[in-house]
Length: 302
Image 1 (cartoon, rainbow, N blue to C red):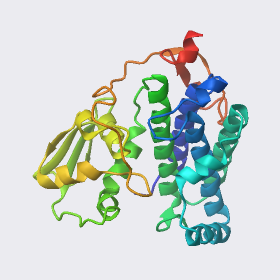
Image 2 (image 1 turned 30 degrees about the vertical axis):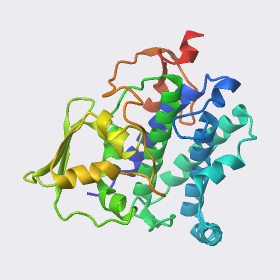
Image 3 (image 1 turned 180 degrees about the vertical axis):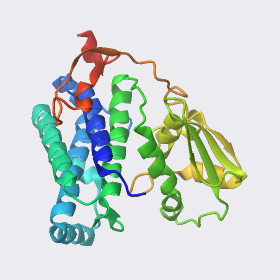
Image 4 (image 1 turned 120 degrees about the vertical axis):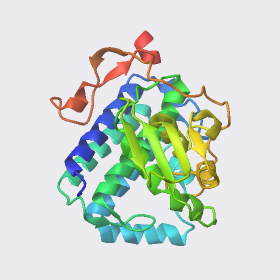
């Protein structure tokens, strides 16, 4: 079944609003707070998203220019997220937030006019426009988690987690290749409980190697925002265990993940919405524009 690009873009817009609800009220000192990603502040997390939004737009509308720049960077040692973050540390928070909002709005606009199946270049193999949008959603959610963890905000899980879980399942082979290890031949069945209580599944039903549990825990694990022990998953079989120990849904060198016990296990959807919408790069009348600042956010108590 062809990917529904309009639905993907709506979900990306909604995830953007959810993140902007968190960063919008922050003061300048908040932006400089260190996050669980060692060496990165909240500002670095946002500049990372804005920078790669710009790069994603370039790859879609001017692939030759993107490839030339990618090859230039590759000849100099390859793209390094830490180097990218360091480039933008002199930006004032207001300018940084404006950059993110404007870059994301441009990405949503430019990608809306493309064919979902069109292949666009990236740092690894080319990918479809639909996959590129899904990857931007995953990155937004994952880096948003780092920001939420820094501020002590507990985000409400949504059905958008399915996109992140799908990337996590699809990245099984990459997780092994990225560490120079062969992929086990045994298939793995994944059964995740969605925030709504619905069951999301991947893999053959009869596979003896299995992973089950909350979709939130799986997504936190494959984006390396939680340690395996804190994801709340039931894992059966050596192939499943071996995968979950190294699972990585994002491109780039193997990540260090998080330490066991660094955060509470099995986080749940107990945040509550406060009053009032927040500014967003999507149309005011769209469903995504109705997101609100969680009551647990520090700004909600000011």
